[in-house]
Image 1: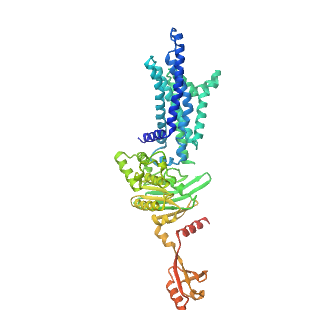
Image 2 (image 1 turned 180 degrees about the vertical axis):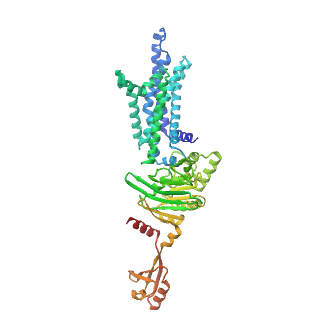
Image 3 (image 1 turned 30 degrees about the vertical axis):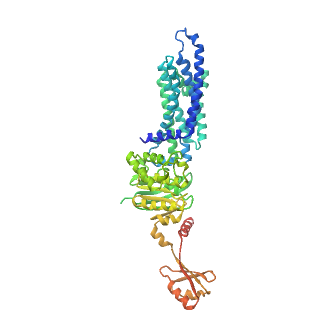
Length: 251
Length: 308
């Protein structure tokens, strides 16, 4: 109950600032452009692959690339959305309102996290509308589409958790944004180092956000990938709780 | 009756720097405790510890019989806290903000409406209820902060410098609000405005360099403020020896020509005899006033003593 109160205010505050609207608009615009060019590409190669047995369909050639692009764009954007979550409250000294209310630290963090996740779900919902519009003229592979959506939701969950943690660490929103962007990018490209396919690289690949995302995007729902994201989220939320508790203890 | 607050041996270090050093006190219902101290004395740190925003390095706090460190959620439900900077969200309206605060304290619809209306009335926020807090003046933001602290009618209200940034009329309103609230709640307020303490508090604590140097009720403090000296002005210069002979006179100090300060022993006020003597001797009595030490003087004296 109190968790949803905090989440509700967080979401409301996001929409009270022009930032959220701008981000929604810009993301939608860029992705729509990519989506249309992907359809264009599909239309040019469609005659060639029409005769091949088991050729990739519209879901593989349009939707999967769209979601992959969306992931990259959201990687750039999530830090901007999460940077203010805690650091701004700390700057404006409104954090003491939450600290002196009868709430546990975990409730505060969970409320903030759910607030930002609600925004992410709205964003993903808008993105998914684009492939759904193809229903008018094509047959979609709903299983793959669902798997792609799950992938995006889990990925956004992970991005937001990192962003929230960085916002708790940094004293200024911009520092939080740069920090979470850097960390996310590093985790994203981690398995590039592993493309040389030696032993050590397997570890990097399994740590990489991208690696697990690609599996899901192919329509392969692997419990290891799901577990990776859930553990990732829980880890960063716990770290955030610890960090805020430290505020109270040390300072 | 049990105490609303029991703070025992509160100590807080920032690194090696000891900000609050073994401070103990208690607060009962109906008391308004004024927390005085120079800048950096540890007032805000103590208040933050009382409200669970800062964990003490050592010591125990019990709020209404509930241990703050062991059962923070229950203890915090009994607390209303206004920090130095009012914790308001600038992008919300007063109504939205108070609703949010009420919900954080678990108030539900009917109770929430009643509570917010009451708080708005109490703090004079009815007219600005639909305006954005960011667009309000400092004084109204401060009042919104106070409204937030009294919203859930907590047993204890902690106000850190509640009258900062208010105009004189608002200050008077807030003081009378504090006195009203003091009837049903225990209140702690910190300030460095001394008349405020004289006017609204029942008890005073002076904290200096992290230590509690005075803990008294206001009546006995006031009796300390009656000093043992008189100011005397005459038309002609007097000979000090003449007055020195009067019972109770300790010493005579010349301030200017024909203006003297007469120190006397306590409980032996020689004003009457002095007046008679001066008139008899024809010096021409112009003024004879008992001197009051101001709260300032007392404050400076106490903090100086503690500093030594």
